[in-house]
Image (cartoon, rainbow, N blue to C red; front, side, top):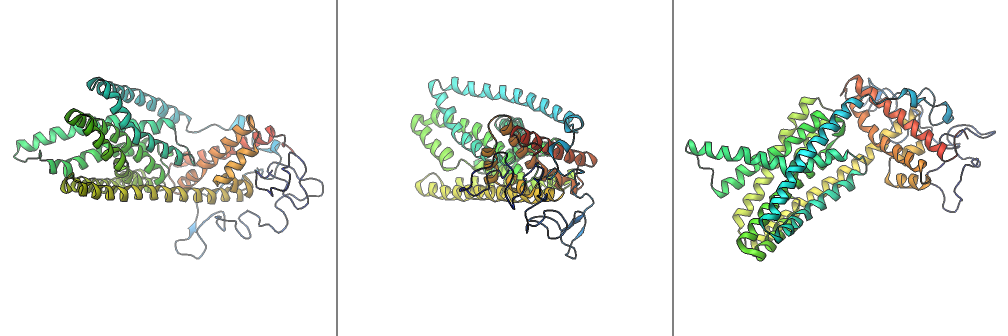
Length: 472
């Protein structure tokens, strides 16, 4: 079984015995006269001898022996008692009876809390949309649709990058709703009393420049990105690195921008009718759609770097540099906008600054995504060395091309579903391994890694059975 990696001139095997020099494939017993394992001359993907790509030279080592910083790994990858890659599928773990998610109770609580948050914030958002639609009569619906264009684009982009290691849709929806509703409400709740209290002691904070450059960045970025701290503390399992943090932060910023666009587009229409609506839409939704997402993503990045290996308090502290960076970038944008004015020259300056910010957002997202794919392949090679899967399967599960080939190879129906589940489990394993080696989560995290490995074995066995390859 090659999952599609074969010479296109050679017919695709369907359960037949492999030819001379071929590997019998995952889950097959060797044919008569054939030796189990890789073909002659191939490097064994174990930890002895020459390590495969991304593997450590020893199962209990981190880094290269003798290199600076090398030390024994206290939590090496656990070897499977019966090799999932070589043994017949009937010899695998009895996962149906023995494998249970150790975090199932926590998952249920988080799911219920998430659904409750979506209901409350969703109702509040519907009320905002209804108010906007009724306030401006027939134009209100148009304002809602125009405001939703950049939101839809950012959500589609995040979902595209999220396909590599999908996060719960409930959590992604909560990020959008937090930005669109909760952060807006909290901004007004804190900013207005602050202005009044400052005025009571003789400090005037009502100036346009002060509000745009100081107050708006401080309150908006704080109320938006504090939800990232909530996520990493309550659901760290789903906050696995800087890519996750960037996606969460981008969705929160997109939700905030949506509600802010409703206010600005509605105000422009009330003041200058259709002309004001068109100009504001071009400036806010076409020229600078990624601003709030870029600001909030900075805090997600810094938290994400700490979430993979740091203690819980380190993740909270790492919110601060990202928050400060978001405030500074937000203040630079608002200050530049106030200083250059609204002429053609000012618009060109703002467009150039927007392109720079958007370019940084796209580039960072692409670099992080590429890094995640590389990390996944390296981690899966280590599991292959421990006998949980073959080296070929590790390559298949660790590349986009391999995943597509695997889905094409698996027939529609149960086989396709088990292939999809294998891909999902394989995507979650690298982060679990990183947390185990960083001693994050304690014994429960190590138990969860074993659970994922057993799930990988289960779906692999079921896949082979559905394809008629079990026991061959």
